[in-house]
Structures are given as structure tokens and as C-alpha cells.
Amino acid sequence: MIEIKNLVKEGNKELLYYCLPKSGIVNVKSRKAYLRTVSKRWFRKFMAFDKETPIAQVECVPIEHAPFPIKGQQAIFINCMWINKDYRNQDIGQKLLEMCINEYKKYNPQGISLIALDDWLPWLQVSQFVRLGFMIADTKPTGVKYTGIKQQFEGREINAYLLFKPLSEEAIWPQFIEGQKIRTKFCPGYPYLYEE
Image (cartoon, rainbow, N blue to C red; front, side, top):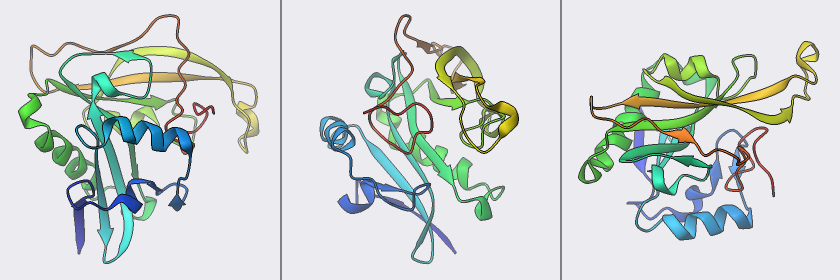
């Protein structure tokens, strides 16, 4: 049976640093610094378990505290969402999103947002999130060239997509901040966009 836990409410500090894609603790000063600034008041992390094994996670904050150069209002930003491939297509992603939305009810969120990458990449593909009801709010080239096992894409520039799922008709759609690189220091598990 799948169980989803609110790691912040449970006070599980060790798993706040746990990265499912990397299968271990992410011990990075910049991530710890980011979590210190947002965790007590704003940061939430939900993790799904099959028995005792972590199989999915989502991290969320109000969009004003997003670790990327974006602007928006009254929206939830998903820092990270990942589901083990053996557990996909079981509505776990939808349940994790619902938990984020419910957690921020007092904040009266008008939408939920995240950053995705090109579909030809193996992570954070736009199409994965479109299936969950997200739409493209903004697109920006990252300035990063692909290097990896997919030889046919070697040297191709990677695009970042700011996705948005409005929760009301009055929702203000987020945008990338002009003139700033799409990079983050909060998690080395974020492919191609992490820099120390």
C-alpha cells in the first residue's frame, strides 16, 4: 500500500535532504542554505512510500520563494517532482499535487507552477506535466548544450519551460525574469540547470 507523508510536519529532517533520482542524501551547502531560509514557514515536502521504500516526492514553496529566476503571484511552485518509473501512471503524481494545493489553502493559491525541460531529454519532460494539466506559460533557452548518451542530440541547446496549472480564472500566469540565467543552486539533482 502506498503511503504519502508530509516530511516537514513529521519533522523528518534527514529526508528533507533526500533526493530520489540520486537515491541518497543531497549534502550541498547551497541546498541547506536555501532550506534554512524557507523550510520552517514555507517549504513543504511530501514523499510517497511503498512499505518503507521512498518511491515518489514533491517539494513545493510559494512562487515568491522559488529557487529560479521567475516572477508570479499567489501560486505554488514545485521545486522538484519525481516518481519512480515503476510507479508511474498510478495517479501518485496527481495525489502529490493535491497535497501541495491542500497544504497551501490558507495562502489561497491561484495556480501551481514548475520548470520542465525539452521532451527529448530523459528528465522533467514537458509532456509528463501536460498530462497532469499544466500548460506552457513561458519558454526560454538555457544557454546549456546537451552532452550525454543520446548522441543525436549532442550539442543541442536545452530549453526551459515555465509550466502553469491555473486553479482559478483570475490566476496571474508566471514568467521568467528577463536577463537572468535559468540556473539553480538548490539541488544538484536538477539536470543541466544546477551550478555551484
